[in-house]
Length: 312
Image: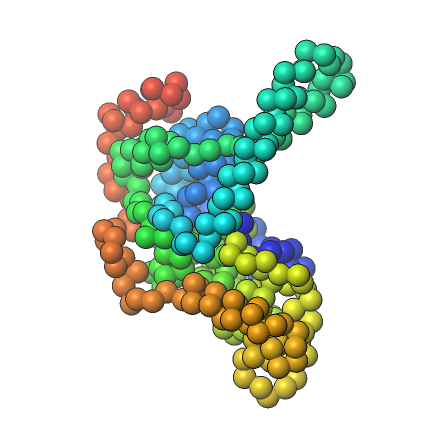
């Protein structure tokens, strides 16, 4: 998901703008959580509700106030991407079933390798159902955790709430393009740590503003459009562009014929996606106070009991 190779590009900076920190350092802070990737990740392990409960417990232990944001409806120009993802899931499941039927023909080390391959394929067609989402929301309700469903994708609302919270917890690199000042990634249930991306420092190190960064990223391709060249290629061109006085990286690319007129208009349209168009982030959805509330222990015990999870 997200901007192609953006994570690799940012990691290549290798500076103090990216560092692992313990969650105790963020006591009393408010954060948003783009929960979609964690729904899939935790369901892969077969412990969806258990791990959501543990995540919430960690936040409450360190007095971190989280707003969990669920995806709403995808934008229409992402339909083709979603169709391809569904097709990939179907193909992975078909291959999984074919290999599983012949599993009895293998033994020893060969069988172990086949079982590892099956495990990899199984993860590729994990589906989060409406019932899964309802169960997670029910858990958040009784555990006193705030949540909301975005009108469109969660990362858009996370970006819009940038001024209201300290950071956004996500694994989707698209969030970097929305202008979040601070991003948490690689949340660890075991170590209680996150990797913090300070986007202000990152942009300073790249010698660009947010609008420059957005144009660089959309040139590189994302869930909406493809690109023949990657972000490293366009960053080299950006450094040439910075030596000129011409405003607008996209305009400069078009003038120098690094992109076609069609590519120019496609990318110009994408900038609009990464711009929140209202002063009220909660417009059209219920306002939600970002604050941990009282736990309904009786109902929480009931939910955890149904999944056989031992309450500490």
